[in-house]
Amino acid sequence: MRARPRAGRKGLGGLITVALLAALAFDGCSGERPPLVVGSKNFTEQSLLGEILAGWIERTTEIPVQRRLHLGGTFICHQALLNGGIDLYVEYTGTAFTAILQHPPITDPDSVRRAVASDYGRRWSAEWSAPLGFENTFAILVRRSTADSLELRTISDAVPHAERWKAGFGYEFTEREDGLPGLELLYGLRFGRNPRLMDLGLLYRALASGLVDLVAGNSTDGQIAALDLVMLEDDKRYFPPYEAAPVVSASALQRYPELEGALRQLAGRLDTEEMRAMNRAVDVEGRDFHQVANEWIEAELRAAPVHP
Image 1 (cartoon, rainbow, N blue to C red):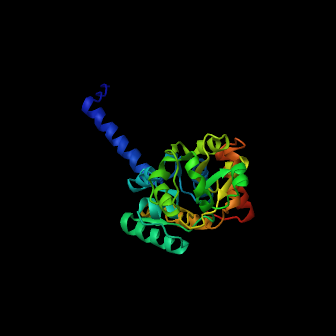
Image 2 (image 1 turned 120 degrees about the vertical axis):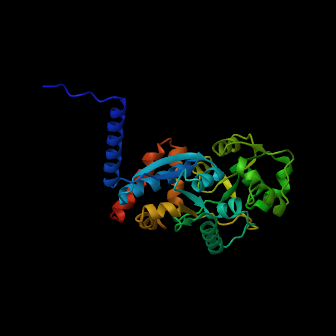
């Protein structure tokens, strides 16, 4: 019996090509879909919300999910949504309205919500889902001792004292349309020295320790109550509404038709006190944000089950 000829280099290459094509064809027939990529900004609340989105979608649909959490600030996440780096993340209506769309701040929640939904759809083929149920506005904060001794209740009350104070702000707040420049202009707020710029996570302890005397934080942060800080009322209604809501690319909704229903099921489920409690659990109690977020999901599904 003659020996069978061995496959030469060309023949071997052909066999590999055929095998690869067969594998790809099998993969395509298997119905597997590329993962839905969930993103978030780079602070605790956003990491929690990103994990809530991802975990909720995994539990209520068959959509494969990939996480890209703690990406960066507002503009980084927005750009990632536009270039396909992520498919969805949670944004705040007032942030989108002023920082991204560059509109002057207004205070009516319905008007802001309609404007961002219209502009995002027209300009970027992105859709806003219904709000999750809470708002996270900028919080102008002072120490409890300062508020008590000077009888401070509103931002206007703080204006006469600002020249003697050191202020601390996050980087975005000093540049945004709804941030420091407009606040100073409306209230006539002037500080005796340039504000210190620092990461948001450091602001609260800097205030509590006396390193600065006034900061701009987030109203749902757990450290506010833990460090006994006082939020001054925005008595001139400078800040717009900041309702938290998922923003998702239209292409993702086309790829995953069941996604819209899953996001709709999240609407109105998460209130302000729950968000504060979760932020506190991570930032003050030192718990893992994945665990905290998934405990909330499990509790919600037990209270009001939904099905894929």
